[in-house]
Length: 281
Image 1: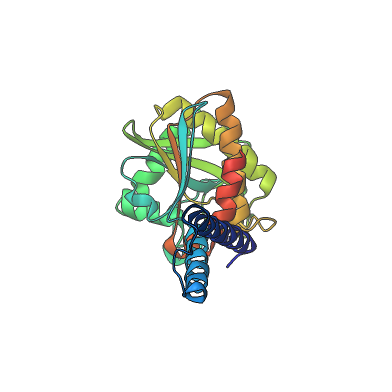
Image 2: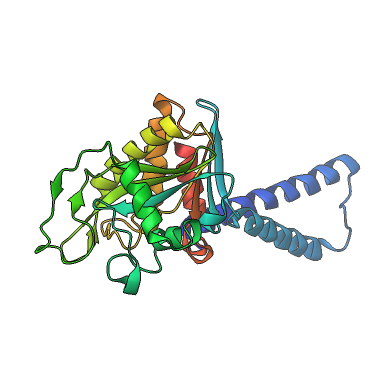
């Protein structure tokens, strides 16, 4: 149990015990007799047990972390699940600045990454079709440099500015492919909190322009292979939340932001802390 959960448990348990005691005293004051004559010890034990159970119930982490906002009218949800099963929402897919796509042997793109799953589940493993769609989406975007083949033996060579968003798919379900990390010549992706914040800001702009205010689902970008080492997964979730709420204060970007975590990751995060953070925004 986390420190916040312990505080909630203790506070709620004492509050419940106080209510029980007040009711018992009120009964005795009105009727001038004990509610359970001769069983004061048993009543106290039952009251204590009930209070503890109530506190535990109140301190139990929720099955999802949610909050609805009135201005602008939108909803944020942090849920366990499968990103690609969010059929009612546009999806966010993280890429590097060269938009590499090949997961063969995990040399360039890790086979277990969201990006590799995107290729497999949304493009049926058709690498050529995905690359063609990316070329079309990026046709109007300027490159910032081109890597020499001698410096990068595998993969693509054109570098795009960090924060570039390639919008794939159809209007009913777009895929926002955002470049939030730099791919080195040694095929190692790296990012930072500053780069992630900038990339998220560009992402919200693209979502506003192309998303039609439909729900948006995304993973915890930068939590693993992008090596944002200064932040743990929970800190990255907080950064995403803060970035989205800040951007939404200016203009409505989407009716719902849904951050989807793998069930095992969702079980590890401190949901009470995230709920408290979300309520503070």
